[in-house]
Length: 198
Picture 1 (spheres, rainbow, N blue to C red):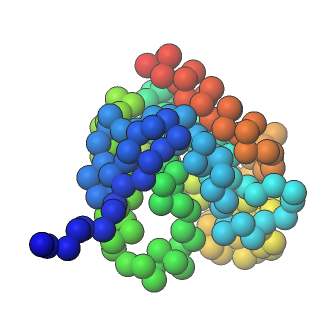
Picture 2 (cartoon, rainbow, N blue to C red; picture 1 turned 90 degrees about the horizontal axis):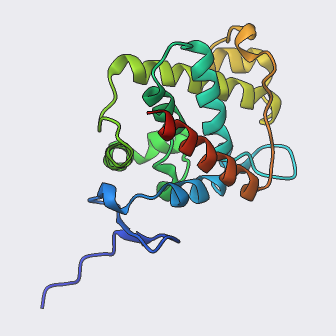
């Protein structure tokens, strides 16, 4: 009898069974994404405060910054910005040094999950390069803010690693550390608001 293949699926709280090697859009639920991301810590948890800074909170900030960078962007690209780290609800948030050590297999897994998530919510499996670059820019600005405000980096070090952001883009923005239940609710609400505008 041939050996049984290793299990590559995860049971979600919604009851869905997500196959990580062959994810399908029908097994993707926003509540599972929001729940997972609200409990995944950015910076491997190496941040100040009483709560971890979650990927869900980061995603909300990235979508806000994306909107400031691209005030006339269609709603669908705002949704893409909100979902830019959505695969991390099952694969976690690996810091760049770990991704580099793991190699290309991490990126391939991330791409498969991203495609399934995008299709589930009416986005193209692969984003246009210009949109992806704009979201990445917002992501780097968010990383700069996080580095300086909660991760112990000096401004000079953050400038060197993430690029010096236009400070006018950051007016009125700050890093928020909140209980996961609050962040999860806001993530689901923002997702619903964006879907309603499509």
